[in-house]
Each structure stands twice: as C-alpha cells, then as structure tokens.
Length: 249
Length: 319
Image 1 (cartoon, each protein chain N blue to C red):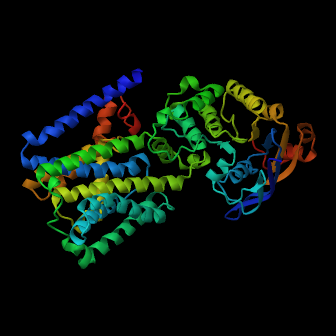
Image 2 (spheres, chains in turn cyan, green):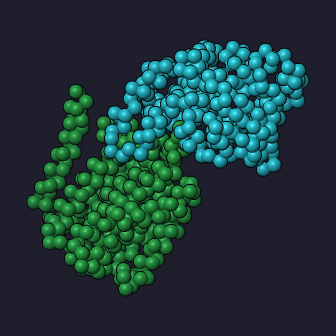
Image 3 (tube, each protein chain N blue to C red):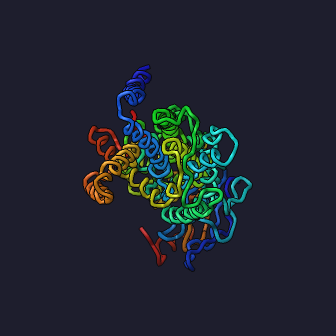
C-alpha cells in the first residue's frame, strides 16, 4: 500500500468540505477521483499534499502519517502535485520553473555560491523534452498559452521525481488535441517510469481510458472505490451523476 | 567556450569603471572623494536591502537597524574595548547577522505587511535601547571622534576602504543572486505556495535571506564609521529605513545595481540641493511622483528595458 486515506475530514467555518474520505492507492496504479463539482476532490488533494490540514482522519504514505506535516516535508517524501488553477512561477522562464523543483529535489536550494546556470541542466532538459516543452524552454512562463501552462504545471511536479504524482484536473481548459497529448503523457509516466498517479478529472472518457481504479466522491464522502467497470455499474454512482442534486458539468 | 568570452565582455566595462574609480582621488577634489565613499556605503546598504525586498519580495521595512548595529559594533569595539579595531570590522557583519536572525525568527512567521510592521516595531525597540543607554552607546549623542586605524583614517584611505569593500560585497551578492539560492528566492517571491509544494522550506529560505542581507548591511554600517568617524541613533531610525526603500524603488528594485543608482541620486540630491534649501525633500517628492508616473520600473529598470533587456529580474541584469 502506497497511500491510504482513512476517515478524512475537513471543515471550513462550519462548512464540511470533506466529511468522510477513504482512498487506497497501490504502487504503480493510476487512480482517478471523480465526483460532481463541490464533491471535495480538490480539498482532498490539498489535504494529502499539506496545503490544508485535516481536522481528523489519517493519511498514511509509506507507513507514515502525513497529517500535520508542512507541504515541503510531504514533497520531500515523494509526493508531488500539479494544481487545478495554473500555479507556476509566472515571471520565470519555462526552464527556470522546472529547475526550481529539480534544485529542490537535489537539495541545492540553499547553495549560495554555485552558478544556478550550471545546476540541474540535463535533468531539467529531460523533463521538458518528455512533456514536449523543450522548444519553449526560454519563454517567460506567464506568456505561454493556457494549455502549455497546464503542461508546465505537470512538468514542475515531475521536477521532484515523485513516486506519487497527484494531478488536479490536468486537462481542464485544454483543447482536444492537448488533452490527447496529456493522456498519452500520463500513460507514458505510469508505464515507462513506474510513477504512481492519482488524479481527478471531469472528462469521463479520459478517466475510464487511463485509470486502473476509480474513487467516487459526493458531498465530501467517498461512495465507492473500485475497478472502472464496477464503478460504472454502481447504482449510487449513477444516482450521483444522473439524479444527484448537485450535478455539475 | 564562447560563454567565457561573453563573460569577459560583460565584465570589461565594470573593470574599467573600477580602475577609473581607483584613480579618482588623484583628480577629484577631497569633498567629492568623500561623497563617493558615502555613495558606496549608502549604495551597498540599498543593494543589501534589495536582496530581500526585490529578489525575495519580503517587506523588509526596518533595514536600517542592521546597518546601525554594524556601525555601533565597530564604534563600541574601538572606543570601549582594548581589542584591535579590525576585530570590530569583522564583528560588524556577524552582529548584524545575529540581530537579523533574532528579528527574523520572530517576524518570518508572518507574511507580507504584517512581517514588515512587526519588523518596524522590533527594530524601533532596538533603536530605543541605543537611544537611551548613555553609558554604553552614548545615547542620543552617539559616539564621536572614533579613531579608525591610520591606513583608512584619511579621506583617501576611507575612500579606498569603502570602494574595495563595496566591490567585494557586490561580487558576492551578484553570485548569491545567480546561485540556486537566489533563483529559489525569486521563485518564493513569485509563488510561495508552489515553492512549498516543490519542497522548498519557504520560511527557512526567507530567514536565510534576511540573515545574509543583514550581514551586508552591517558591513555598510562599518564603512559609515570609517567615512564619518561617528555614529548616532539616527542610523537606525525608521525614517532611514524608508529612505533606503525609496532608493530601491527609485533605482529599480527588479535590477541588481538599481538601488546603488537610487542611493547615488538621493545622496547627491541631499548634498547639492540641501545647500540651497533644507526642504530638499520637496524636490525628492516631486522626483518620486514623476518616477511613479513615468518610470515605475525605476531609473535603471527603465534603461534596461529600453535597451531591450528584461529589467524584471536581477539575474538577467549582467548578461
């Protein structure tokens, strides 16, 4: 078991965003979290990677409880993430964006007197090549198209060489072609690099074509986690998506 | 490699400026030599502030405290102890760095404006102690007639002392700006949330930045003692901190040397306009208003942009 989330709960000023989340991710799996808008998917991810602290429950990653740990510590333990709303270093170049993460992984963040220019160059180039952004390495990242920024989101997360990669709606706002490329990239990362992937997504076609297992959330609660077929045929899931009161996109 | 050649090409004008400055005392009147020393000192102070303000995006609102403590360290070692004066110069950056660490440990938990406001109050506390502790710091009179070692006591000696120290500090700071630390510091400035998510300990990074910046301010403080031969509590009063921030904005706080230029402008304004009117700050106010309206990037930032180099980031400054 790589990641185990049990009875996780988080409330904001009385509003319960996540009331009872359960999640299991095995090493090497691609796991999707789906659910209507407002089901608590992003909050769940923020809890796992430490941007938010859980009120109760456990998040066990490789036999260690992550609850209460700051984000940078969690990252150091092998979990990286991308954000739903583009969250990059918009004034730095594409190359520098990824290098910040690689330098952090290499523990050279506090190196005062080497030239950053000479550090982490080949690792950064490899990542940019693998996601297809190498040709735009010198561009200021804030000037990229939205689709490219979403790809850069993922590239920055890869800079930390994660064992578990968490992607929050990796294809949101992408063109169909960009979505296809991202899907291919996720498959590649999983198959060739053995990275375990946890993601949430509204595009059901994408979810069912890449995920080994799917967890469904509604009203902050996990209703089921299982194989794609089992989830597709589950009556509660059909209820949530077809008859649910807070049906989203 | 051509990389090496372009590095030399970039370095050449700076070397020329340095050599020119080395010979400056031979043909400049004494008062101008003194002014240059003052500009280096104030400029180094402003560049050191910009390390946290421009590069790190931290609201370091009371930088003068670290400058003043550096100056007082030298003054007290020379006048109150039997130690070699040089020990004072070595201690100045250390004491300033320690004070930065102490104030930083308390402030760095807060973000943005709250960080700056708490820093002003803690810094003012230090100022108040210095202002009242007559037996040790000379209180509001300060300490005067500090006899620095002979070699740096003349106008020329003080000039060379400040020139060489400034050059060394600028080279060190330039390296820090371009180091992995400097790059990470910029990343934290642009996006602290993402920085944490990629494994950077943001608070520790900011604290380190403060300590480094404070140490350089301490060195600037020690240079002030050599040039003026005295210290007084105004060196760490909050209005001076404001003035240093203005220097950074004036010169261009997204450039490496902009604050040096801003310091030069302010020192010259005060000296030459100050001769005609004690209300020289009115001129400064007008200059600032024009600046905000027409050159929001600061003077150097404007010129870098005009010559098609990005003035947004200090690292690209010396390409």
